[in-house]
Image (cartoon, rainbow, N blue to C red; front, side, top):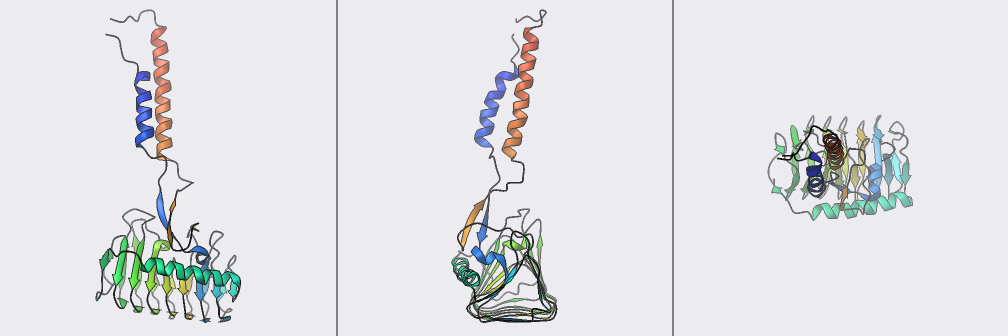
Length: 292
């Protein structure tokens, strides 16, 4: 019986692999439009007390903006770290304000995964999804968001009226999640209690207040129609990607710096194919080899 060369099998394996193994992992990211560049955006005023620090990076600079109002106070002692800048009643801030509105409306229109009306967020562990509060939402203690190992998992909270956190409350993301993918769509105003450690982007219809020492570790404070008030707070979007796309849309993104599983498998099978070719040639040149 004539041996079957591995080289005869690998082309079929290659075709199977190219058909069934995706070349790249793809994910959905929510775009805030030009508002992504801001850590804080107010409509009437932005006021600060104490050494607040607003931080971005080269992808999202971490700007401070106000529009159509032009009043901002407390910078310094507050700091907008470079490359972030301050935009007061200019075209950049106006466009960001419009993009906040588009994003706010899109988040409000998402179909809820679960209605949590009447429950305190403190002590809950939630999976990726869209969570609805018909009226106000309260966080007392720790809220845990389990991303299930997916760095692109998103969490959306639709809140009918106010969002309030008690002092020393926290939002904790586990299993590979990213606070940049957490969105709080607040129907009126949001207030973070003292020393709250918060995660996510707050898009409030009215005002946003961060009391003394409350921090947004990964996210933004974006007000549609009111003021933003700060008091010795750290707000950072450093490490958040800039999602290219229309504001208020989910955009399919493909990581460009991760080896492609399909490409790795293709390369491995190509190596096996070459090995099979070598084996066949050696057998053909071996005078002692005979087929039955």
